[in-house]
Amino acid sequence: MPNFLQQTLIHRDEHFIVINKPAGLLSVPGKGDLSDCVINRLLVEEPNALLIHRLDRDTSGILVFALNKAAQSHISKQFQNRQTDKQYHALVSGHLTGEGSVDVPVNYDPTRPPLHIADPAYHKPALTHWQAVEQFEINNQPVTRVKLTPITGRSHQLRVHMQYLGHAIVGDELYADEQSCQLMPRLCLHAEQLSFFHPVTGDKLNFFCPAPF
Image (tube, rainbow, N blue to C red; front, side):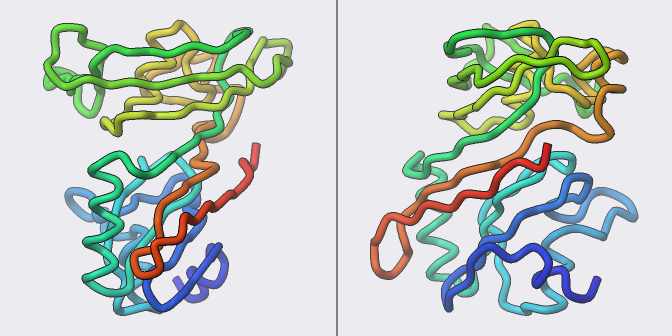
């Protein structure tokens, strides 16, 4: 797709680019004929783009791609070593107040792909901090705007943890009930803020991209 980079770009220097990924688009190619994805669109306009991390297909928000191998290695290690700070913005079903944490492992459920489940017996920890921001209603259904801070980065972690709390993310076709799915035309989960260290200067960088819902 022409001009994809121009339409989504948040920041660019000679070492990396930061974009605002649209909801509904894979980060990398999927199985079968699912070749339309962020990295393939970027490569058309920026042949040096290299993957660092990814977001679920239906999650929007901040995504970083390196422009050389050294930057890819440096920033990837920050993700692996949890030196990055990530914050997500979500709408969840029901009224939730205050703040708290969900500290329950998330495991893939091979009987129901691509679902994951909260599994206390699983050996890899998963930790999410949450903070309620405001309560309101959509079509007379109570919802809450929340900030979510994942400390670990398991697949579907935020979606499973909110379901575990009893407040599934609005529009989540995998983990929310039908009523919550129909409130919005998309998964209401957005990677709003990301901090990491510049791979060359070492400066701490902070990128912010407000949620579109």
